[in-house]
Amino acid sequence: MSILTRRRLLHRAAPLPAPTGATGTPLGAAAALAAGATGPGADTASGDEHDPAPAPRDVLRFPENFGWGAATSAYQIEGAAKEDGRGESVWDTFSRTPGRTLNGDTGDVAADHYHRWPEDLDLMRDLGLHSYRFSISWPRVQADGTGKPNQRGLDFYRRMVDGLNERGIAPMATLFHWDLPQALQDTGGWENRDTALRFADYADTVFRALGDRIPVWLTVNEPKTVVQNGYLTGHHAPGKKDPDAAYLVAHHLQLAHGLAVQAFRATGEPGRIGPAINLHPCYPADDSPAAAAATRLYDGYENRLYLDPILRGSYPSDVLADLGPDSRLVRGIADGDLAVISAPVDLLAVQYYTPIYVTADGGTERRWPTSVAAWQQIYPDGFYDILTRVTRDYGPIPLTVTENGLPTIDVLAADGTVDDAARVDFLRDHLSAAHRAITAGVPLESYHVWSLLDNFEWEAGYDQRFGIVYVDYPTQRRILKRSAHWYRQVIRDNGV
Image (cartoon, rainbow, N blue to C red; front, side, top):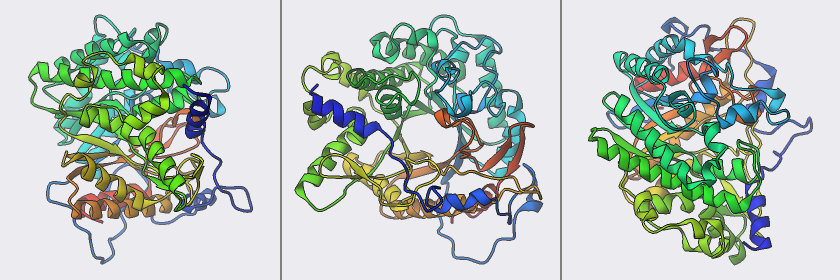
């Protein structure tokens, strides 16, 4: 790997500071929430009596049987980090290391979902959710990532999945949402090819325990985030800064995906399976040929590096050329790997948060207001662009949106409400873009807002709240935000 390529990779993964106003706070609709204005919000986690009366309006109707859902992940909400045989994960290690997370926050308790899941499932039912996308904690099922499963961990997920089905909510389970067992990290983690094989064994265990109860499975969540944040910038677990290792990790994560798909097919279960990939539409920052060329390569690292192997059976040639023949990725591809990675999938889960504008020298620029997360530019048209691009470039594979949301600094007002008006605007605009994509022929089946609950937001700790349900962490009380009431009406109307 050349010095120039190494510098480009580190620059590509490095978050830029958000544009700020005169007070130094991020620009954008979310910044207005810091004052904690009140309005027609929610008081408790149940009861239609708190919903504002819907105003007469034209509704963009979604297709009949469109699925409306919400999403979470295990380490971000479960807590119970040392209970019932759960092992240590890389995020336990990372978050407990001083200086790694804001305020030293950890997921040890999080939203205490492990103990409060019946209440949370009732909340989902009251919101009218059709689908719930969650993740299974690998170290809760296999403490060390190998061997005999922890029956108490499997029983927890069996009870929760049964509870979802009893409430008429379809479970959508993610096998890996970043919480790799620490014992596997100690033997090389995702740099070690054997970890992909261990993942296939874990996946097989979970399929055989729960496969008759779960209609949709997602294999690996956002491999790109593990690569960029975990191995380029070091902002996520395992906290490395090693470009040579990063893209070997990308290969092994995708190999793990393919092996899990094969394991699922071998069980004979009738459900569906696919990956969950965060996609960022990339645009040239100007009209120059140099910006166009830089954007093409940037898109290769952001999108095609993950889409092409799974959906076309090959890595993008421009990315491989840029990395060079001696890169660990190129040298790590064994005969037959791409056939495994491209094992046919039933659907693709798309996650969208932000666009990227690429300059002629391969850098990036901000073009749109940001949320309180400096990396997120608010640009709903990018959602339309990435959905239509997937269908245009990869054919009519069924799509589900499994993450799309806005972090804010929500405030619980004196009257017990949370008026997250900016989140309502964000969701309305992005759902309108999704509707346009469906009208344009995109086979989008469902949408899952990120997130159901406020949660542990990785290195940002608990300051940034993504949930449509407010979690009062000292009491663990759940409070529907204005956005939750709004979303319930969207589900009732099947439109925005």
